[in-house]
Length: 209
Image 1 (cartoon, one colour):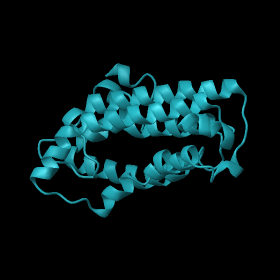
Image 2 (image 1 turned 120 degrees about the vertical axis):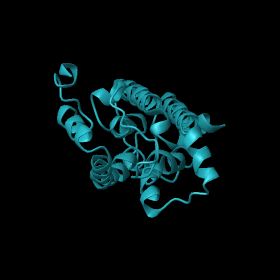
Image 3 (image 1 turned 120 degrees about the horizontal axis):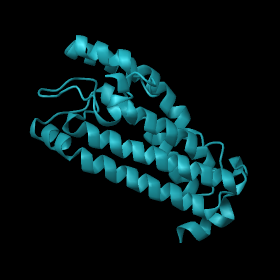
Image 4 (image 1 turned 90 degrees about the horizontal axis):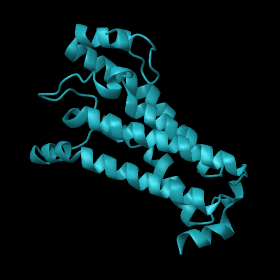
């Protein structure tokens, strides 16, 4: 069995491994549910992902592949560390916040979701829901996940894998996305940028609009 095995090969308590796996499955279900329409459209036009698209999936190494190796095998056990149990529960709370924000960002974006830095036909600028306060709540959710991961997976490699793989994507991709959106929506997007933060709200500004 998966979790009894882990007691012998990792210092992470089984409860936190369970929380991580369940959270990952929940996040995957969110993504699959809210991207059904996008995937249907792309299948209809026989769209093939460009290099820009594959960059989006780089963090999969950090939140899926490396953690899976850690949980399912003893190969990374030499890099384990220990934390007080309360730190694991703090990580669980942070992970829950990340999943909540991930869900809301998909729900509020709806059919306007696209993994590529292009504006599709019929796409509108979403400035409601969580997008009223921050422009990139999905990225914010992944940062919360990245901070929670080392509290749930007590391993120097698996714990910090998402943070290491996500930061380069964030700094490369976000300016490109914002340039594309500014080019398409013009003044509306410029005003939106002025009253919102990228991943942290500009407190007081959004409620004044």
